[in-house]
Image (cartoon, rainbow, N blue to C red; front, side, top):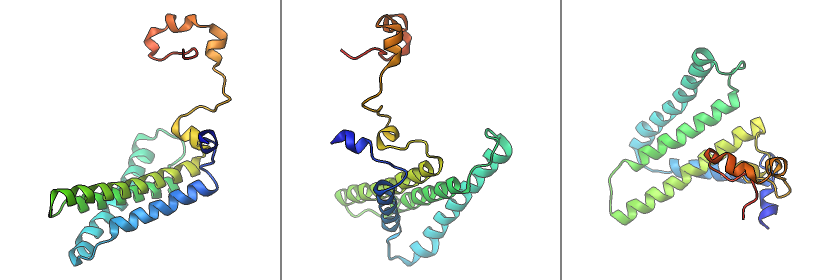
Length: 174
């Protein structure tokens, strides 16, 4: 069962659609509040942050630092803005009056999960743009089940003793 789940595509199909729906639900949960001051002060501040972060990132990366020959794609900047919006809304929702300790912990946990859903959905969108990690297992850093460890096969088990500074075993685990 786990090998089947690790083989699911995160570029097309049900996984990215589910992550997008969960991210949208998380953003709605972060926005859900009835205060007039929330909608007149807090949400515009969060939207301003969501606009400034991608613009500042684009200026720094594309004009000043220039680590890539191509400019950052608009899709990645939009997902960065959505992430900044979610984190700004979370920060403003967590600063406020507290009724009880248990309610505050529950509220913080729920809002944190909502913000995490938005961040994961945005990361999924960036991954869909670049296509870096096609299956779920690659996104989690799990090697495929049928992948052979060629370092151990070529150099043998003595390589682990020869390179102790590597910090990990290269050969098969005992």
